[in-house]
Image (cartoon, rainbow, N blue to C red):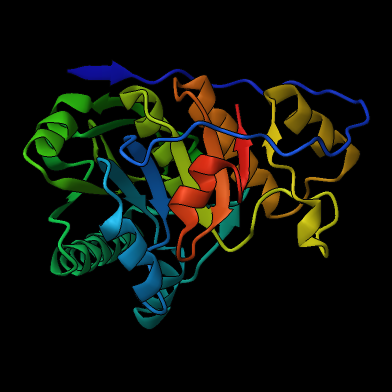
Length: 276
């Protein structure tokens, strides 16, 4: 079954927000989740242990930006960004796909060794991620238009964990897709909560004070905080990815630091910021 992905529109709001009392969630560690992780294996042992031990079904989407940049540099290509996205000329697309595919195989092997059999995929496999070109200035960069959820369901039913590299496919060939937006599209198509694991504890009122974490935010509150400048810089694409997951059908999305115990803590509301 192919699930068409809806485009998102982000409104503007402007009102004052205050930290609320921490929510208490009834949580189930057997809940199926979509988890977005980075692509690097360096220093990832603890996080891979955490993911491998999770008792529920998981669909994983991984990135790999730093590794792509490193390999492009090795091969003599210059790297440019436009509107926060990597410009990917056709001659660089092969390198991007090679790096992401190799990273996925390494991550899948590491999870399998830890007792969680995983299968590394890209959007090429069984037309898993069909995509549309974003705009000519970006080259071979796209956004997900349809997700072949049947393939993912079949793998999950076999006890396997799908691990997806964000490579989409259009009529001309592969497209480079931002990993966060790809994760949101897959989560929405599957109807799964999306957990974006990153290097921050969540959305903070004061970036220097971890205790100022917002445990839960609505869509409108996210837009308000962006308008107030509380959410700024590198946090903006993270919350926009969370909003995108919601708009595409995910019941909720969370942003949290990848560390030991993070999945239980996110589900219980003890860490991260949940957007719903």
